[in-house]
Amino acid sequence: MARRPMMAANWKMNKTIREAQQYTAALLPRAADAEDVDVAVFVPFTCLHEVARMAEDTEVIAGAQNFFYEDSGAFTGEVSVPMLQDAGAQAGIVGHSERREVFGEDDDMVARKAARAVEAGLLPVICVGETKEERDAGNMWEKVSGQVRRVMEELGEGGDVVFAYEPIWAIGTGETATPEDAQDAIGRIRELLEEIRDEGFAEGVRILYGGSVKPDNVGEIMAQEDVDGALVGGASLEVESFMQLVEAATETVPSDG
Ligand code: PGA
Image: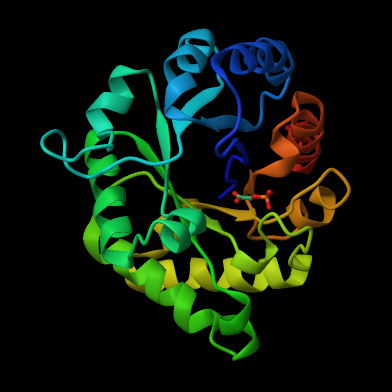
């Protein structure tokens, strides 16, 4: 089954509303040409409504970088899935390693967030990945498979999700996993999903790679059989470099004729 690639910009804690407007205005006409690729932008809460409004009648997906699994109540500082949808979000990152490492999110919380998103029809992009110490100790798969299993347990038979394999040592460091490392981990995640759920699910689910994806390495990463796109931080902050990544992804899609 041919999976539709997804190129996702993760702005992290960057951009004012004004900067978000300028970026989105430049992105939309260019992204419109990338018909075979899903282009998503995961933006700070403060500019989400504006980006979603601008992208409303386009194919560009506006998303949030985080949310909580309860819908409302005494959770100071949190934003719920219905609130995101009210602001126009169609997707949300779940369990980014910076959420896990800096803000103490554990596998249970990540799994509950993913399940709440699926239930509400918000597409979750669920991040998994190991630290340098875990990789060096030969524990990459133990860590990653545990993260995937916990999410799948909570999802039950639930619907559309995207996974992102992001080795923590490659995020924002300039140190990219080799294309073979990316393929190895992502291929194993797909096999695990088949074991947990079924072949149809495993073959259909998109699994992105994230960690220092740049215009000069995107081609070889996207050429890997099981890699369905990228979640990009640094190189997504400028429209020009993000669009180079989107265009590289477009080139991996076989043409119909
Ligand atoms: P990076 O970030 O591209 O800056 O390494 C990726 C991510 O954290 O999603």
